[in-house]
Each structure stands twice: as structure tokens, then as C-alpha cells.
Image (cartoon, rainbow, N blue to C red; front, side):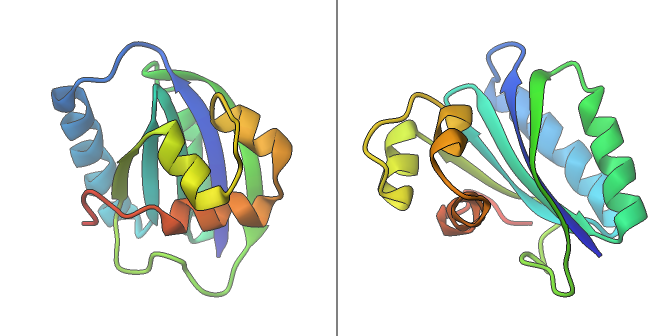
Length: 138
């Protein structure tokens, strides 16, 4: 199995309707492909952890990379796993603020997720995504 974590920037402001559509599509695809994970939306940026069978994670990330709803995709973590972090979720979802991120990480000044990553190790980024309480977790 494999787990990846990436950050990207929304191409346009994301409305509640846009996010609902994105989540419905992701959950349907992930359920079909037996992929699990969590999506965090922070001030126009996405942080997403996805995990599952290597081939399915790779195929999912290939679809994500060509999705026009975001750009500047930066892959931060890609490694083999034996146990999933989110085994029961097709896609958990969190809306957070930069303040929420700073509170969870203990970092006092960041301007975005990419800026945060420059200051921390991979494990802290994973702790962040795990530590933020999901809005939905289906």
C-alpha cells in the first residue's frame, strides 16, 4: 500500500456547491477504487492525504494532477504503508484557517501551506492533517 500527501492552490474561489460536488465525485471514485484519505481546504489551498493500493493511489493522483480546479501541485510525502491512517473514510473533509493550522502545528507565522512545509518535517504535515477535526468524514 501507499500513502501520499500533496498541497495545491485552488484555481478559483471554491464555493460550498463546488466543494460539495468535488467531495461527492472524490468519494464515489475513492469508494470504487478502495482509496481513503482526508482533504483539508485552507484559505484557497488544498492539503490532501490519500492512501490505498499503490496502483489505485497512483491512478487517483494522476487524475488529481490534471484537474483544472487547482494548480501548483506539490507532492510532499510518498511512501509505502502497511496500515491506513483513515481506513474507514472514502474522503474526510476539513475547512480550516491559517490560524487553525498554526494552532495544531505550534508554528507562529505562516502564510500558506507551502510556506508551512518549508518549516517542518513530513511527520508534522501528516500530524496536521490527522489533527484537524473533519467537517465530514464519509
